[in-house]
Length: 483
Length: 95
Image (spheres, rainbow over the protein chains, first blue to last red):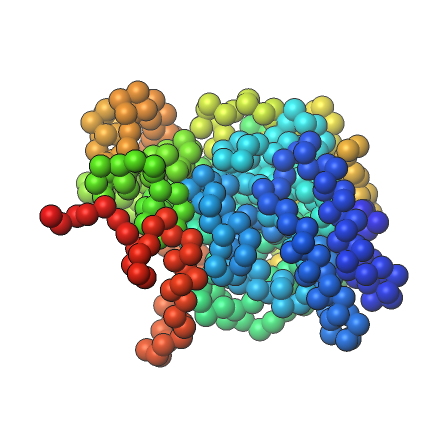
């Protein structure tokens, strides 16, 4: 049952072979056993989960079920969840029980999905290893010496270890795709603007995008069907016709033109990752796709550009944490200004403070044009590179990460090395394009390798089709770590 | 350009983050490395390029100027560090 697809679980619920309460109890029981090894959840509340499962069973009995009704879903702790502690992995919000629901949470609640816990994450989603969490690092279920990636490392871990059938994540520069790759699961960051950011604690608003993490692309499609939708409470939410993301899953791939950016196949990618990616591309050739070399000349600048824009937006977004209306307030202080300074100094961790300082600097008088505006201009060049590439191909592929999961502590004290783990994912974020990672085998130390699939704007259904056809031929997505 | 110790103290001050000397020295070393990476941007000629702030070229939506939220003050203040009679308390700012 723990390896069943969402469709299979949904069918069992519909046929009354199992109730949502029973299903939820199974996953909670497994979580009780496994979570202490991995630290993947920040909050588990069995009573609240089971109450939701009971409601779901009533919906099913009344004939009001949709595909994810009664299905346990883990929620990244960045989504405000009414009545649940919502920490964003930070001491700053370690006492924050949210008084309202994020849109994403509302959407899952409306169809009767069961929240089985809030997953651990890098503090304020700033990190690529889950080591910046105030709640301690998450372990990679394939190898507890390794990081799970980040920032959605807890979500990736719970899906990989089968503590939940699916989870939500958020991605600003790679935070869904990189942990999905390092934990051997599937994850998609949709086109910017498709999933509402309302109630999703803001990091870099022009890049932040919620998305699903699950075992297979077929499961991702069902999750996207719940998560995507216009929301007037998010000023950048896009108004579009409702889509069924499962509709094209089975389409043949004959004649599909796969673009391989030469910049992503240059030095930097380790041999084990390259070998797994090559084998995956061979599988696509067998499925009838053809390979086209494309170029993204400005892609190598995506890390510098990202580390100007994301901290700049973060420094502004995180100014709201001042210890006045909610969150952490320092114990002692001399005056109002001192209260702000001490609350923020003690409430934020080192990486968050580092990024606030970078952001404050690049936005400060005299540096704004040289850094912030220059970064926004190169952002346009990067987006233009993709537009040019998509004239020659239908979809772009490459490695999700340069190496398999690294060890805990390995890059902890070297921010630059840590930042470079998003070297292949951040360009698509800057362009606002959808990006997906699917498992395509194992590299050194038997750690998973992810294939990165970048689609054109709004091509999620096609990307999921491309992932699904591969997953019909291979079983990497069904491999479970020996937990 | 090179970041100085005083720059770090100044931006920490602007960002309202208390920083002691040791932390500021460490931040200087790390931020300098990060800015070396960021400097690579300066090699690109962008004189003819328009800055891009959002991926999709959409216009800001406007809504009718009507009340859409109900008063939930009590609920919101339940999680506040310090409140009194419906007001958020902070240290005295005016003598």
